[in-house]
Image 1 (cartoon, rainbow, N blue to C red):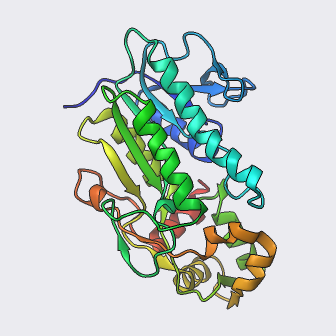
Image 2: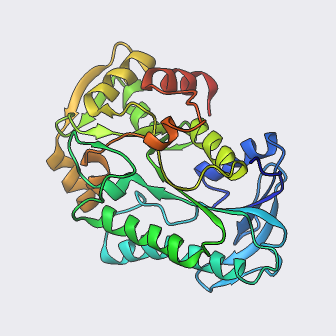
Length: 308
């Protein structure tokens, strides 16, 4: 059954994914709203005030919301993983989920769907093992532990009378931020670097495929539960370096960046680069969703030409 269009409340709307998603929602005929501490917005989008640290949200923010999407949270790669930063990374996600859930429970007419962002860090460092939504979580490490807490907050705080969608994001490729500018910067200087051995897998997704899924997921009641939000084809570090070289600078030199240098520079946070997760979006492949950019070459070609 197809759902009607309406107000979509986005926590984290000003971020990399939220900004592009807002454009997709507007094109699809939805009315996106941002929850904002500063009131800053783009695209003429309406805002409602909230302060997650104080546990406050503007009365009426959730009024008449058809869908709520939580993309909020402190950046995982914004600094070294001290104990304090780890705590903030987790609590900035579980706390916002709990605050939104509390607000939802006060609504006489609650939203029909809640989308809570998760991550493939759930699987940890798994080498070349093929990972689907049914694969168990990683044995240990900050990423599997933190993602488990984030998903548990969604499933326990958000009422089960509301359809819940939990996308596990892979590495999101966009020119506007995230990993891609960090990859393409050295390429333009003639160096196509891969990290560590280069044999570890990176599971990625073009930002437009990610946003197309989120729009489809809120409007189509067939989508529910956990989804790996990655392209069908993961790439190794060496394959990524080769694809970047082919797309951006054929004269660049492919060379390694040793794992010990990354560990020295980033500490435990280097796990986000060195861990290997070969993730398959099995539920998406078996759904009515189709990827516009299923392979790394088509994705990089579009990103180079489109500027998204």
